[in-house]
Image (cartoon, rainbow, N blue to C red):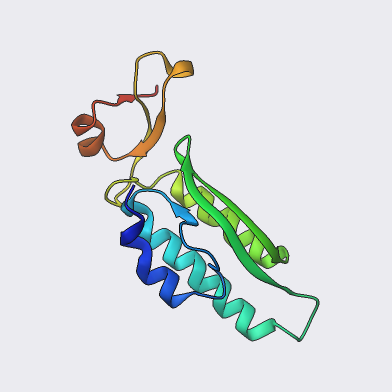
Amino acid sequence: MGNNNFSPLYNKFPELLLEKNVIKCDEGLYSTIAEMLAAVKVYQDANLGKCDLIPTVFDLIESKHGVLNIEYCGGDEVVKHIVDFTKKISFKTCEQCGKMGQLYCSTKWMHWSHKKTLCKTHAVKLFYYAIT
């Protein structure tokens, strides 16, 4: 999990990512996270001050059990929908390369294993098992 790969996002969205090391996931989710931040920024820039919108600040963006776990403060229903949509997309996006993926687990014992969303190539490379 290389957070250095996400440094352009910290520079581009400083008002959304106030602290460094907020993003803790593999680089395959870079585009998904970048698009989410861009959508929130565009919405926030257009509506801040016009309604009861509270500025959004992301506290944590991490890959957990094969899907993005996103913790944030502020926002409104529109921001919530953007975040929820991003989580759904991440469930089908390879954490390593960003291609279409599915949920895999690190051992044959699904309940005891680490889960990741991976494409077939990375699942084989990392020795992950398909969940059927």
